[in-house]
Length: 158
Ligand code: GLY
Image (cartoon, rainbow, N blue to C red; front, side):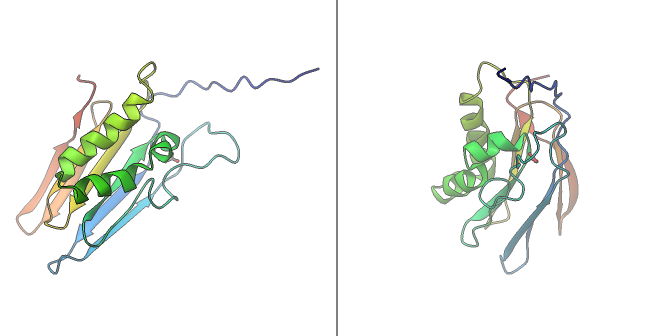
């Protein structure tokens, strides 16, 4: 008898638990990190974006870097963080690059946008940006001028 997978967990958009951090010092040196519990209900053996350099995190010391949260396999499909670095290298701001990175993922999923992806990014000048699919993705910016809570703009509005 043939067995078929009926793996179709109902996952809400809150199913993302990744924490990403990006830093730049006063010499312009960049660093980044991300840590995750991984997606709930994922199939045994599957892997998310966070441990894959270029997907969930990528830092290019000459350009800048992003990090991601959300459904990691979708970030892996576009090598999302590497893509955002390359977009910044071509002249996009961190905000513009995050928006394009999310839009590439949306293009592959237009029929079913029931998940969250969020990117934050920083460039060599210390400019930052953030963008996501679903509303409600927040990030915090600390600098010598103080700190701020930011709600990333989103593809789907509230
Ligand atoms: N973003 C974390 C994961 O997909 O595992």
